Amino acid sequence: MKEQSKQIDKPYPSGNEIIIVEAALLMETDWHEMLDGLWIVQSSPAAVVQRLKENRGLTEEEALVRIHAQKMRRGIGGAGMSSICGDNEICSNLREEMDNGIVTAVITNDGTLEELKYSLERALNDPK
Image 1 (tube, one colour):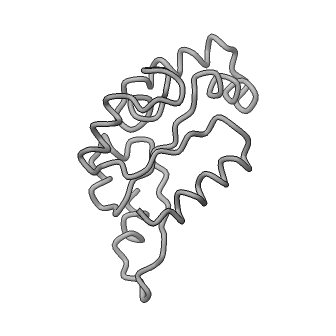
Image 2 (cartoon, rainbow, N blue to C red):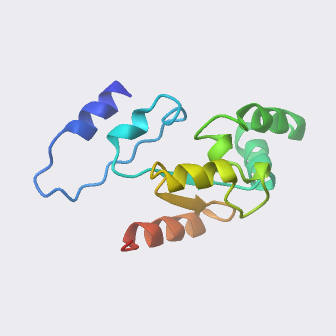
């Protein structure tokens, strides 16, 4: 993260560049304060379990243990796991992060990679 923070602090000539930082503990360590925006990508428990089984070779039980362990961590399960409050619903703790201006966008990732790319492009081009 130290190397990424150097890139974030680096001045850019046009001021329009986008730097993407993927960091599981970004909010827990308050590193989000150096960003202009913070997007949370959330997925339903069923989608996460399926991906963990397919991509990491976990059993369903192992996947559920991992999900449960991350469920209440700020910025991971606490903000991005719709299992806390229901599919396609913004949970109260995430709503609070949005109301406080910490989280600036929420992207739902329950579909294909192409659908995720479309959602990200749409959010990026959204003038709000």
